[in-house]
Image 1 (cartoon, rainbow, N blue to C red):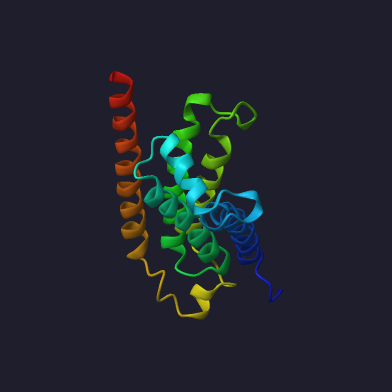
Image 2 (image 1 turned 135 degrees about the vertical axis):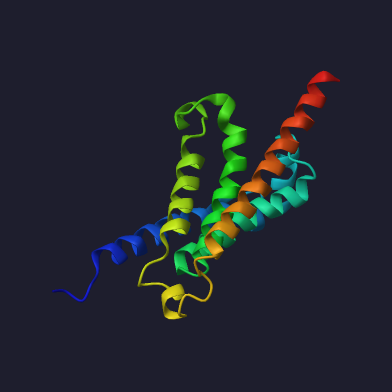
Length: 173
């Protein structure tokens, strides 16, 4: 029998890969890294997409992606990390949904995939090769899973719903 657990190694690879992608997108929004607009540029873009107030929306999206991604990669507070990243991706899905599913036509395929992957990691747990495991699972106890996902779902529904109402009001005016 080998001392390396394939399941835990797979979770590590998935966490690090997904977390790195989310961190890159979040740091674009927060700091302008990797060709991003930074907080001010992202705030303007968020306003144009119907997320108001733009600066707070940009900060929340950037923190959900960068913070959630960093925590996923580390395997720390994994349920909260997965829920936060999935919630941020719900907002991105709402923006891309009118273009259909496939990414090549501007659709929601990519943010949906990132959101489902983050959610799956939050539900499955980080595995043995993680800070959660090293810390005795203090930040990913069983009760944190429903609390994190319920909180994230409620927040995402509120944000996406407000955006839809604001856009409907603008169209009616």
